[in-house]
Amino acid sequence: MDVSAPEQEKSFTRRNFLKLAGIAAVGLPLYAGEISRHEIGIEWLTIRLPRLPEVFRGLTIAQISDFHYAEYTEAFFIKRVVEEVNRLKPDVVAFTGDYITHGFWSLQETVNFAYKCAEILSGVQSPQRYAVLGNHDCALVPHKQPVADALETHGIPVLHNRALPLEREGRRLWFAGAGDAYCRQMNLDEAVPAAVTHDGEPVILLVHEPDVLPEVARYNVDLMLSGHTHGGQVRFPFLPAMFLPELGRNYIEGLFQLGSTQLYVNRGVGTVNLPFRFNCPPEITLITLG
Image (cartoon, rainbow, N blue to C red; front, side, top):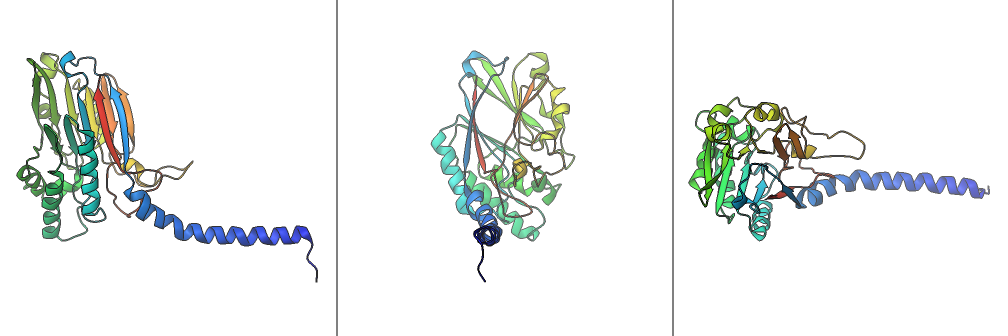
């Protein structure tokens, strides 16, 4: 039986659609798991802080976050991130939490991962390095905080509800860090120095979860740096982000402002739930203060 041209075209289109669907079903997870998950996006931006003394203008801050070693994030990839940060030669590096993943491996294995991750991150070359913990870190052993010990042991100060000044020519810029909000360890009265409210000195606050911005803004903080959301991790066009954690649903990625407080949310390096990233690559942020 002869098949007319229109029927031939229709049959051809259907077969090819099924073939492409099959390729997509196999290829998309492969791309998201092996290629997109290992692509590093470097976001460059200038943030103006009105209270910043002139001597600090041009200061560069590299922010990296959410490593989740070693449930899915391999050592070789974190080493690549460290190499990229070192190429940028930042004045300050801010680590904004979740160095391990809590709950997948045994407690002892996860503690070992924390020390290994801190060892790799200690390769970051910068005059100043500051860190805070994330919800996975503080949930591991809430009262002993082995992740904090791992970082401190490898020369990375953990700002747990405390602040340290960076001084130049008699002027000060404060770097502060809050305890993790999800684990109910955040104490902004301790984290934000009195100099911010009394003397008008600028402060940059590291907080893992971004959705505490309204509370932070009441403390007259100039800039808040957060992670936690992974930018949604898997983002299909025209659809909501697939993975958004509690306290990470209002400010998903990028730059925001509430009152006089600006917030930047970094997409992070690693993954949770599934070893996939799509349309949401791992991020290193390089901020120039203006």
